[in-house]
Length: 232
Image (tube, rainbow, N blue to C red; front, side, top):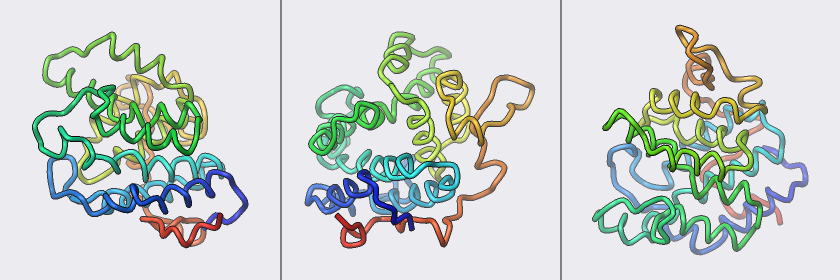
């Protein structure tokens, strides 16, 4: 486990100890995209992905991503639309789980990259689904996404972590990463990006080369995080 002093690690401890975070961990039932059912199980799955990427990440990157893993979906039960299954609200709708999560995270940090990643983490997949259904996607939404994200290395790393699960499509992940490949230039793309078959751009393809993510026994955070395990 990474035990060196780090402000983001301390912040994670405060977040996971918050009653709002703890209250929703066991919400959820098996559904499309989330066969693992609960938010707790989703966090655990993404934690394994983070630990698999750990050697490529700085301490700040690791703990920022750990925070994003905990926060990004934790408020799905607080969204009236998602709780009732009536409709999926637009990403910027105040009732979207992303907007609620962003507001919660803003109580702990004003880091614009972290807040933007939480707010827009589902937007690439939503645009992919538009293209899949209609053969085109909304160019205004796509440009808004490109404008909204300050740190593409962080955003792309989170897309990989959140998208490499039993319930997610690797084809969708490939297309989304290909669309933003020129924006990210750090650890993910530098170390983990390979050529597409046929030479059609590049993708973050670490999961194909390394197989299922496996947590490191010497440099891994156990997910879900026990608040007591994170010193303040």
